[in-house]
Image (tube, rainbow, N blue to C red; front, top):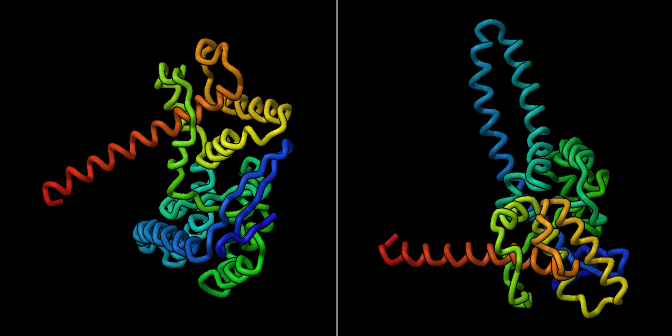
Length: 275
């Protein structure tokens, strides 16, 4: 279901337990800026390839031209496939503009979906400057271009205020995760921001859930976190799945807040010396 909040499209995902999560659909202008950054990266790489094929031109200009065309075609399509798979739905441009590709149903993004949406990118670009893809994105309810429609994917925005909801986390007096910083760091590296957001939303809405659904939901979330990191038994023994999730989310947000505070301090110090 799509809502229109303050003129922005929102993707609403409902879990089998009845919990609803809202994700903001990326706007056309923001996606265009991300594509511009990616295009600059592709052009830079193709320029380097062109310089390399100049040596082949000494042997055969036609062969050199053919190698360049094939290399550019592979690069233009392979760039999106590689980066979005390697960085969990983000290319370089999407990282800069805080965007992410995800499955339209809220499921885990699959490699075949990434391949499909990038193989259809040349069609979306037609006739020039993503005119066709932009038009389709404008008229579809979930802002999907042709590649997204075929792959069942959407592009969502990652809000910059992602860490501000930590004040609502009533972390227990003792979080056993803090005694194992290497496990906290490993979890932060492997979990997606959108997944942490879903877990946090579940924590904040836990009192609204049916008791049985609440237990089942937190059991699933805890099991997923455990699949990312092999926690030692003593880390989470004698605590419920819900407390396990609360500790995990609090640990992730806690590090983000520390980093943000350190960054602010550095900026103040730089300002004081006239940077």
